[in-house]
Image (cartoon, rainbow, N blue to C red):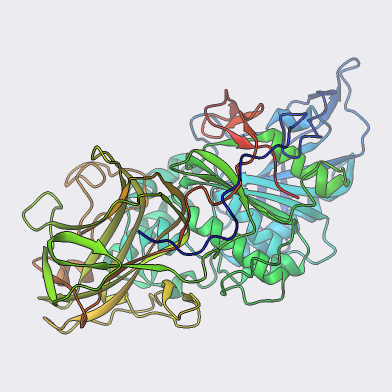
Length: 603
C-alpha cells in the first residue's frame, strides 16, 4: 500500500550520547541537602471568606534540626485528594532539595470550606490567590511553581490562566490531564457516558474527604448526566478548562510541561492543550492545526506508553522547575521539537514539533466483504450492524486492509467518514482500530465514538488537511438533533490521535460496534476506569435500543478510514533510559522504573 510522502528519509538512530540519566544529558538533580520538616497545617482565607486547608513542609538543616533560612522557591500542589492508595501529602523529594512544598485543597474539598467547582475559573482565581500566599510564606523567595497529576494538574492549568502576567507563578507541570476534553473523552465520549464516569463518581467522596460539598456535587453531576440534563451537553463545560485557557496561559508567560500516556483517559486533552499553547505562542487560533514550522520550548509535552497517573518522574519535574524558576541551563530549553513521543509499534522515543505532520491523509475505502482499500468499491453496497452487544449476531462489522508490504507510520489525527442509516432516530458507533500481525494477533491502536443525535460538527474547530478532508471532527455537543429513520447520511468520527509504527506485512482493521464489551461495561457491577462508552442517558435510552444500521460503501456512500500515513520509521530514534526518580502517584512514593523516558529532547 502507498503512503504519503515522508518529511525526511528514514534515518538511523540518534548518535547523541547522554552523560546523565535526565533529558538533555547535562543536568541531574542536586543531592538532598535538607530534611523535610513535619507537615504544618494552616488555612488560607480568600477574599470572599472561604478558607482553604493547606499543609506546608519546609527545608530543615540536617545537622541542627532547625528550619533552614532559605530563601527557597515554593511548589504548590492544589489538589482535592486526601486519599488515593495512600494519604496525599507533601512530597519530601523536593523539600530535601531546597523547595518549600505546600499542599492546598480547593474550595469544598479536603477540609476547605465552600462549594466544589470541578475545574471552573473559580478554581483558577482561587489558585491565583494561593500562589500569592505561597510567595509570601516565611523563607520563600517569591518564586512559585505548581505540579500535579489529574485533578491537581487541572487546577494548575486553571491557575496559570488566571494569574496576572507578573505573577510569582513561574512554571507548571501538568500531568494526566488536558484542556477541553473532560466532556469529550473522560466523562463522556462525545456525549456517550463513559465507564470512567460510573467508576469515579461514587468514589470521589472517599478520595476527597467525604464532605457534603463533594458527595452531593458528584451525585448530582452523575444524576444530571444520566438524566440528559445540562451536565450531558457541552454548554456545561464552557467554563471548565476550555481550550481558550491556553491563550491566557501564554499571555501570562507561564511555561507548562504536559505529561500523558497513550492509554490515559485524557491523552487527547493533553495533546490538544499542547497544540493550543503552541498556537497561542505563535499568534494563531488555539483551535487551529499547529504550524509545525514554529514551536516554543516553554510549552512541551511527554507522551509515553502508559496509562493514567503512570510513567511520572519527580526528577524531571525538578528539572523543569530548575529551568524556568532558577534559569539553570538544564539542556531542555532550546529544543525546536517540544513534543516527546513514544512511538507505539516500534517501541521507541521520537521528537516532534507537533501535529499534523501529514498534509494529506490516506483514505482507505470501505468495500464489500470487509475490505479496506485505496480504490473505491466498484459497486455501492452496505454492511449490517445492530445496536447491542458486540458479541451478538451483526453486533460488529470489520473492515481490514491489505498488508503494508514496507510498513507505515501513523502520525497524528485519525478519522473515519461513515455513511450510515439507522432504523430509529439515533445512532451509536464505537470505532476500534487495530494493528494486525501476519499471524493474526491484533493490538488496538486507537478508539473513538459517535452519537448520531450529537454529530453536527463545528466547522471552525474541526481540523482539515490540505485537500479539505476532515481529519479531526469536532462535534458541537450542544443539543440532540435526531435522525430521520432509514435515511443514509454522512457522519465524521474522530479516533484518538496516535503515533504508531506498522511493521512490514501488518494490516489495519477498523471494527465498528455499538456497545463496549462486558469486560469494560458489565451489565451488573462496576465498570472499568477507562474512557470507553458504558450506559446510556435517558434520552439515549429512549432512542438507541433496537436500532438496525446500514454502513454504506461505494461511490455514492464512500465510507473511509482516514489515516495520516508516512513511511515506516519515518522519524529519528532518540536516546532513552529508565526514569531514575520514578514516581508512583497512586501510592505517593518513589517507584522503580517500569518504562523509559526520552533523554534527548531535540535541539
